[in-house]
Amino acid sequence: PGVHATAKGAAFTVLGHIFEHDDLNRIFVSEDRRELKHLERLKKAREDGLGVIYLVNHSSHLDEFIADVVLDQLGIELPLFAAGANMMATPSLEKILMIGSYLIIRKGATKPYLATLFQYCRALGEMGKQQGIFLEAWAGGARTRDGSLRFPRRLVTLQGALASEKDILVQPVTISYSVVPEDLGLSERASTLAWVYGLKYGRNWLRRPFHPLDRKSTRLNS
Image (cartoon, rainbow, N blue to C red; front, top):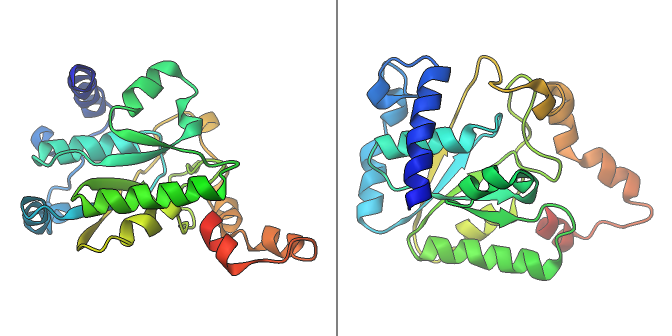
């Protein structure tokens, strides 16, 4: 909690100065408040103890922090985010991310690991917890040079979260940028190629003569 309080204050200060805001009490929210249209329904779901899945696009390294800042200003507790192991290369960043994240192994994941991950996300939903899932996540990263959307993935985390036997509220979250707010070296390739690469059909087609596609295993590894 202490680290979170410190990081929260730093995040508000930095993000409040990097970006332009119509209202510092509601940063990253449009002047007409269109993003808050379903806020009362979301708060009601939390009062009723329902699990919530935030489906967030992922164009920048700042997306998780921006989502947390917005929810905190709205008086909603923070969700638990799925964070890729590739984001933990910097020890200081790892310490901050692991305050509200769990680690995802994107490369070399075994079937027992994927099954455990599936059941973990399912349990979070049935316990009435909140989860943040980046739909554009993949083995090589998710960010693009121009902030455009990538092809969404069929993630094990999402499949597990939706498998809950209890009602789950799904809340889409869109974070848009006119320019990616970080050095291009930290981002992925241009948007068109990134979108095509995300389809993954070409690679599967080339491997088919040697590795016939199994519908079940493809679903688990998506």
